[in-house]
Length: 140
Image 1 (cartoon, rainbow, N blue to C red):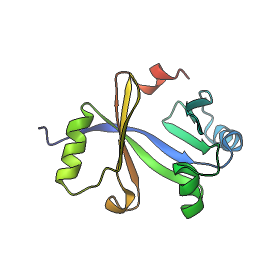
Image 2: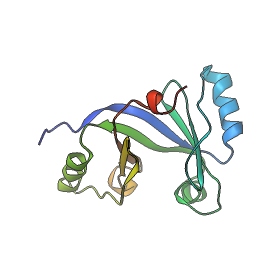
Image 3: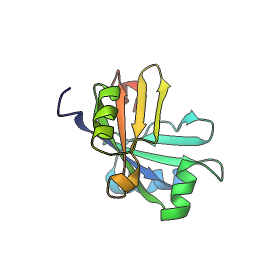
């Protein structure tokens, strides 16, 4: 197994209560273009910009983003890391004592695993194994 599991930082997730308001703010201060919005699940809407930011809004009162905002407020939710082999990356994390409480297949092109923030200094690290770069999955 390779000692370097992460290829690069792919994107940064920001949890927000109001996606439209957040897009308006970040668009005005960063002059960037956004996708979507996209609904990757029944209770989440998201949008990516051309720089590598992803804004996440929970559309129901309960869920991982809503729970995060309730506990910590809006802001940095996780750092998306690109890996070539998700299973090897997860095995490497677990060998190092880092818990991976969630791992799943989003679609045929994307598999994701997320670390427990208590094991990684309060930050969710989301490991992404994708067949295409995000701009190819969700054109900007």
